Length: 487
Image (cartoon, rainbow, N blue to C red; front, side, top):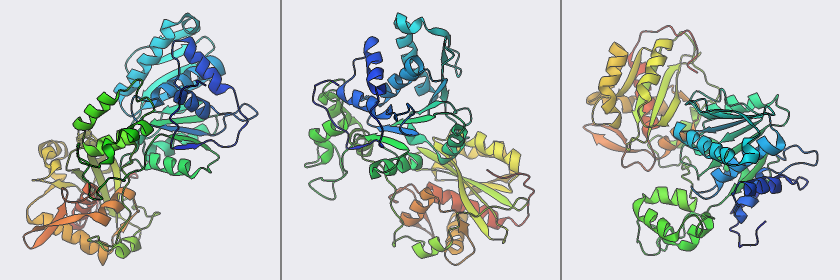
């Protein structure tokens, strides 16, 4: 390892193992292609490529959490070159949340392989067609690049699976992926990400396991700083606010090991002025956007909400079913909820889909309408972010599109409140919904009230979605035939 001063991760956990040469060999391979590693990059390679005495990986999973353009993508790229050229792993699959990010990773690795004879001469074939990018060696070792889908982990199985942009992973993806690795002789899953978003349930679980420092199946590195510490507890973190920790250059250095090398202090200062404080704090200081815990001040009492939690609850096939769509106030994410009937006749509400943006919504819901035949798809018909989809939803769904507006908006919230506090409603206990129920703020609506997106301290669109789904389900008496599970 280089003798330069090292910015050590705030959290580092490696299970017990016999010191191996894998990290050093990966670093040497990097040097052979002009990629001299920083001390932190060498540390990360050594950790995630840790082996046992028998040569197997020290842990099933390895995660590197750090801000952008620091080390995580480079470390993952060098690790997969080591898999191909030194360890001779059969199939390596590189995935990212966005297709463009996946393509960029392919172009970077392809350029390195193509520019150095000792790598290029061992290549049998390179696939460059969009969506089919990959590199195959003469040994048969293969590196495939795939963009992840919301449908799960289908196609992601390999001996090594790289999950870049891990803050966007969903439980469905992991539930599809991990069981497929059980038949591999020595599988390895590698995560790379910035600090998590509020919706990053999978990554948050990895973080909690890694920080605990006792998980034998996980290697974990995280460069971050502790939130808070501003001169004023009520600090709004705007650029230039006296005593704000987001302006502390020492904090920048602690969370950004490449600062002063590939990233300049001047650039981060400009980025600080340009980015929203929350995004700068997450990306450059490693402050996670954690959801709040269920509190006592919610409109719906915590005790009542807890009493209606049933993680094993299921909707009965053949009974009535309604979907609903809502979009967060800043349009950053859309949510789809369902309400159906349990075996005991009680209504079951559940969040069934969420993705960034709105472009995916109409096609997603139209596919489910054709497949499951719900009685209605509800959404707010005016004055809400989802209302911009009104015409597209009506065109795709026809008569079952239920635009809730005017007095019906207050009625829907009142009906949901009654069902959740003294009525029959059942929910699974999903974190985004729990958070919204805990802290949602309401606004007056004539003699009624409605959920207030802008004033609520959390994204309440999951709550708006299930509220609308329940209203559509309860307002429609006719049952429909559902031939398969919604899931």
